[in-house]
Image 1 (spheres, one colour):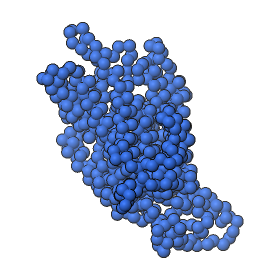
Image 2: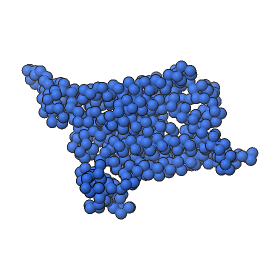
Image 3: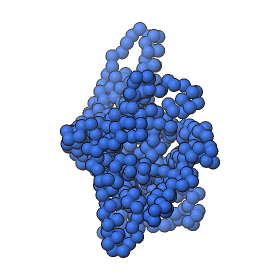
Image 4: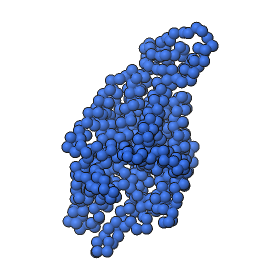
Length: 545
């Protein structure tokens, strides 16, 4: 808002404490800024530009990187003569693998009958092994693919009518889809920037991401990423029903957005503020049902294909299950004779994720200061990737908006992202094969292990900052929980003993015969309602961690 009398924006006079400037606060950014003249000057006045705002600069950076992402994949839509006077896709020389341009979008255009205008979930096809298949993606993604394929055909007709070059339908399909997916990612950037508040420049982490170059158009994940970031922004701005609707839509496009509901309900339990999270959960369920029930009713077999395929899939190359199998030669995770799916692998993967979620829940309810919502969501999604039997390389894109909000530390995040890009290229060279000047699987395995270690290091750093809020850059800047919505500055209502406390209590119980009964502990200095008690199973405030 303008300040009366001087016409300057109030934000123009914010101090460095109030306005976080990465070239002052982050060593990596400070060194990188030398390319463009060095850090922001001590006497610079910021916040006065009428058009070139931080959000618009971030959007511009994202647009540039998304263009590079399209160029990176464009090698897979190059055209060549087909020998009959026409053109076809040029896949010669192991092009998809050697260039790294492989993506699911191009080959699925033909294999999923999108080139014949067949309706998803209604139409089936028979693979070379005699198996009948349907569209295996969630409903919104499936119909997005179909809609873009129709737009590609219309563009071809339009180009012919106005004298423009007529591309192959699949090339138009890929490019139109990339443009729409890019818009969803720009939505994610804008939503994340609105949440970041003082640390808006940290959004550049997801705008300049090397991971975005190699995977922005590998699959259709940007659809769900945009909806997920939009849901988080809606929640942060106090619109729980809209947040739930976007979570429902995102889950109808990709499964992972439903994981947001767990952290919301955990913080609702800790703060006693259930109304918003319950409304969000109900809205998400209703919207998901509205999208899915018609397809479930009309084409039940086609709708079930997503569940069937994910049940029957073996371990993906990137998962630690596949890495273990490759290094050990074990058949532990294989599908047993006579079974349709790898039952042990499915149970183990689900069980490990369940254990991880239980530990995160215990941690969230027992730590001294309430974790930020973005921190918990990051932990849950990262745990899902590490324990799931399928970690398709582009799944790592899910973490980009989350890591900006949970751990805005440029160096470790960028190192992890570079590792993801290396994993992709080494996987492509492995697919090319040693006989075609590719590589064996072992360089890829080594890179995947390094990537996993780097992600685990990010998880450990997030946990450390939850345990030590003074080290949390977001809270250090003066905010409590920018993404928390109703949870921000909320007093605790329910906490449980931490694991170290339980161990101490057990040891003390063995040394002392007198037991003290649990007492109610006040809300504490971090709450805005000191008189409101919180339910706690601890004996003394100084015994909590």
